[in-house]
Length: 305
Ligand SMILES: NC(=O)c1ccc[n+]([C@@H]2O[C@H](COP(=O)([O-])OP(=O)(O)OC[C@H]3O[C@@H](n4cnc5c(N)ncnc54)[C@H](OP(=O)(O)O)[C@@H]3O)[C@@H](O)[C@H]2O)c1
Ligand SMILES: O=C(O)[C@@H](O)[C@H](O)[C@H](O)[C@@H](O)CO
Image (cartoon, rainbow, N blue to C red):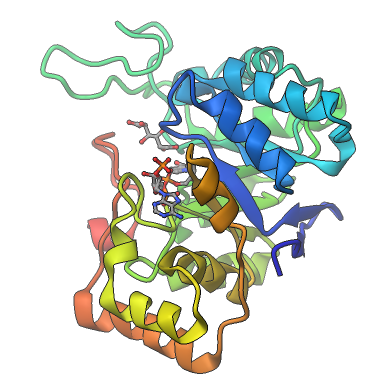
């Protein structure tokens, strides 16, 4: 099941399992990417704001030198918030760092334009420490700019990340191009079924992030998940990643540890009783969202009202 591919509304296919690179430290990420490619990963998730695309690019280059073809890989990167009014400029910076002339998917990282002329290139803040947003620009205008990228040949598909149903409805009202993907936090503590169902109804593919609960993989310690893992003689990580493939969604697992990069490829077929047990976790433990930057904006997520 590791080599499962999911169809996108562009006609292309996205590999079910991707390597995440957020917080993959310089000095580690090149090796992580190169190792992932050498053990069969076909999908790499990047972002301009991760500040490590040069090294990711070096890891990709090692893969190409070893004979891996560009067209066999699916590479995603993301437009950062301070570049909403400079879309192609930000894409070009990422392509240069990655050493690529196109990406398979370009995502709007967050639907929140930030001040491009603020006191920091990526995270401008006001004197009170709150984030300095660009209220003169809207994420809808950003999307219209992203729609223009298709004709440059630099992107194979465009999409969004961290979009709630409310924001998607607003975007679809003015969109000409339907996003190919919505990349959202997703795991048994935050299944976001409302967004998953809405996207499915609009032909938008879901990619799950922070499937292990992000830094330190706290979800691996969840008793119910360990029980399922024991039943199948696999790791808790395999259960947490297989959960998304069973739901028809692709999933991103970040690691810079070679043994874990290999272990995370072990996607298994979960039984309906396993999925029921995973769904029960939410009822028992309630919602937990691990990634919620302090933009100071209501992003429309029911658990953050
Ligand atoms: N669009 C967005 O806004 C957004 C937000 C968050 C994440 N993402 C994407 O999604 C990716 C994944 O999410 P994430 O990085 O937040 O967290 P994650 O993949 O849920 O968890 C990463 C953590 O789990 C550890 N880990 C990985 N495999 C493991 C294993 N088999 N056993 C035990 N621990 C393991 C990693 O440690 P080591 O690295 O030390 O092995 C790291 O501490 C990101 O890297 C990024 O590409 C996107
Ligand atoms: O503080 C932030 O806005 C960033 O660190 C984001 O949380 C981060 O980029 C995640 O969205 C990971 O993709």
